[in-house]
Length: 312
Ligand code: CDV
Image (cartoon, rainbow, N blue to C red; front, side):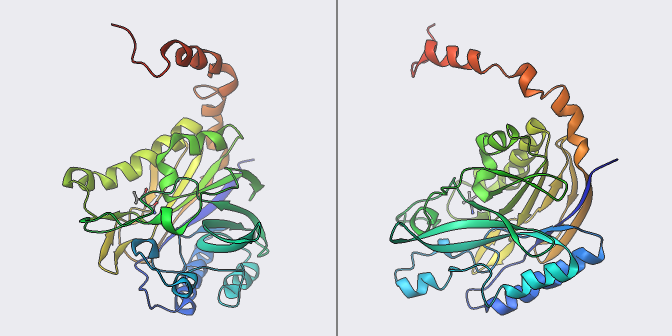
């Protein structure tokens, strides 16, 4: 019998700095209800889906910074999402800024959670590949200060048996790194959920900015194909606080093909009926890791060349 997850990619348009959490949660609820009406069992929201993308700012006032973070999940403002998930019997992935007390110190992470159909948190992931800088880069048109605002995730890349399959999570810049998918692929992942905020116009050479939409899909399609897994990539899109962010939220099959994609830069839901067994022929043949991966040979190559280029 086919193992089907009907998944919704719930893209968000911009969130203004002053937009109250309750209003954002209202937008998330509207997309969740739409997802349920179209038959979804799981809905995926973007990275930092409760606030504007605040790492674009230096932000020096500790109380101001803390106002972008959630100290508990669920909390008074997000409880409605969990209640509605339980009522509708729909799971969700949610990205948010997490503030937590660890080893006697307050730490901040760029986090996502996977919530099941009964509204219980099944799993948590903390972003590992933090892009940008810890300090303002002088003269740059726009800043990306994730290394200032977040610690490197300390939960690895686990996978969860959920929704009838094996699911994993990562966040935005993680999607550009083959290790992200492969670590989950080695654990048999069948669907990878990704939220992202990808700005353009921060001061990169135009040639790089112009290729941003291509690189977005290239990395996710390669990750899907090379690990025989579904990938659901969901953007916060549009012009947010003067910064343009790409959309192109999409659902990608284990073949690497995009099977659904958002057309707008606003709140938009796309859905697809994903057969988790579609990855099986790839896992059993071309990407049969046990049969074809040659880690012992990769090691020999590293040993021979070291850090030096090969001899002429
Ligand atoms: N939020 C992100 O991680 N954004 C990065 C940008 C800054 C390159 C991304 O990989 O899309």
